[in-house]
Each structure stands twice: as structure tokens, then as C-alpha cells.
Length: 134
Image (cartoon, rainbow, N blue to C red):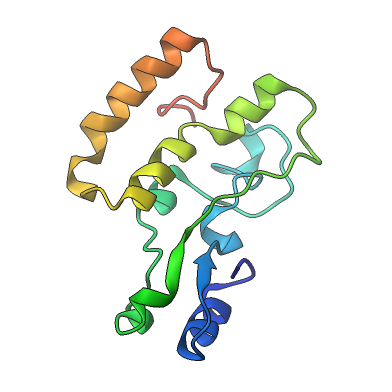
């Protein structure tokens, strides 16, 4: 499981090991979603919706070892998350973008699908981070 960076997963796969790509710089959702000044307290770092959607779990360096990549995973540690509303805020909509990445969906079609995801979250009363929030 390569969580410190992609390099560890790349090295392990080239050595023949199976890997799960989960680099903290790209898929840790206990990081801020935007400039920390307007966000609830987080552990640090920055993981935007856009950077999550742009993530490639199989980097070019593993193009010939794609068989060694079992998949990808996102994380949300709760040391700085006091309640479920804060947890939902930190998880969504980034989890929607991550699911698209893990499923291998076409990035060009993400915006309309995200709108559908957000409609569902609204109906469910999920306290997600609004897209126009600065």
C-alpha cells in the first residue's frame, strides 16, 4: 500500500509486488479542500476536488506493470473531525470524484455526473462542501 507517495508503489510493482495506490498528496480527505482560511480545521495539506478527479492510480511509470496494481483507495482520518456533519463535509464531493477515478470513468463526462451525485446528496441531507464555496 503506497500512501507516502506514488514512488513506493512504483518501486514495489517493478519488483513484482502487488500494490494499492493511495498517495496522501492526492487521496487523503482529512486534508483541506481549499485555502485553510475558509475551511473547518483539518490535519493539513490540500486535496481539492479537481486534484482528486485528475488523479491517475496507474502512473505512466507502471504502464507495463499495470497487472501489479490492485487498485486505489482514499483515506479520511478523524483526529480533527468532531462529528458526522464535519465528516460528511470532508468526504463529499471528493469521494464522488474518487469513485469516478477508481471506476475508470471518462473525466470529460464528470461534471454532469457530479451534478447527479450532488442532487442525491441533497436528497439524503448530506452536509457536503458546496462547489461554489470559497
